[in-house]
Image 1: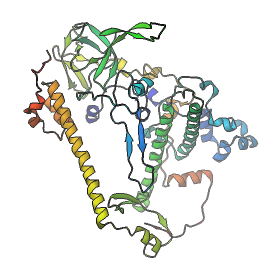
Image 2: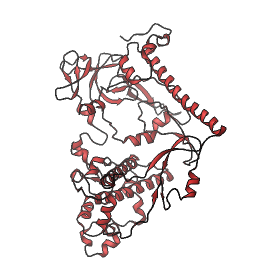
Image 3: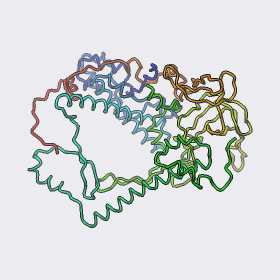
Image 4: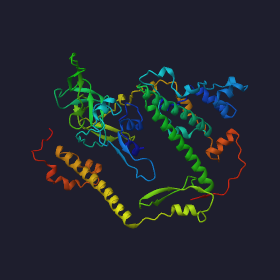
Length: 268
Length: 247
């Protein structure tokens, strides 16, 4: 991997790498660094490059970017880059990303209000991707710990259940004080059966809809193959077979519809 | 190694925009059910877009796909392995520039198109108003990759058919059918809107330097993320949670 591909988005608002490093070396609890007022009162204040206190203006981008058409930034953090970072750094990065996301969403809203162009809206997506990847990495670490210690993932348990309409939905378990056999309120709330004429009629129509969607998709892909073969008589059939596995290409090949009502114009 | 090479297309995304942004920018949601338990989640949105030489995150694209409008379906033949890259020298097989060679400047895989520098062009009038007749500009029309162009063999600069083969090192390359020479993928393919080469990228204000990104600070430890952070911050939890049931 080339080194520049590794250059990526930090997205600290005026918190540079120096800040990140000072976090690492600082022996103090983190909250002192985050709030600049607290950092100023401590004797080690000069060792920190704490973010300038801009109050509400921290929700807005740097003023020099306001009239820009494009604000260039690097790419999002990847999971493999986040996996080699310590928990503490991930925790700090999370808040940096969160602040940046708040700032970008505020800027987007304000630009819409003022009928201005919001420069480089893909920055929001880059921050969101970074946050998603960071969450994935944290979850992986927690899962590993729980699997090692308890043999379970430690995730919120889920199971597929059928709702009042007879449709399968995912039920996310909740934490309760009472065990299930004593929790009458929960038993009543979960005592959902389905049946009766109305539900059966609904299910019939619902399944018909699902079937129709499938049928139409199949017809559409068959028509697509037909049109491709009609226009390109010498098209590679193997490619079509791989691309449209549910279409019977050999049957279509001999079909009148793939030929068309004209002498095929063969590409020279 | 081979399977990843086989699956991944060698075409680089010139815009360097994340996929999520490209999807989000072209999205046209007409109606969406409220996110409540008593609704089956349904979205009514535009599914079919007309792709043109305008990229899907631009205003021109939106103008050509205005909400509520419907344009005729365009047939796009499936192409299994994309083989024409930015910077490739190709020969034009059709049109007024038939037989001429040029360099690919833009690739539009949504329509199996490439745009070749200075070939297959026409005059186009833009900016015409009542008073002002507008100005004439020269613009290149796209060429279809399966029918209108073919690659040029670098050994004799003649148009040639080619196929994808593997080298002994397991790398997938384009090989000229006539001379058996490898047609290398040009360096221009790796250029993006943000940088010409990865090494030439200028670090911006909010970018983390590559050295910091590559630094390994993770120490394996028998604790969850939360436990580790609490330890770092000196938070101690003495309370024992009451018995609870998950169901």
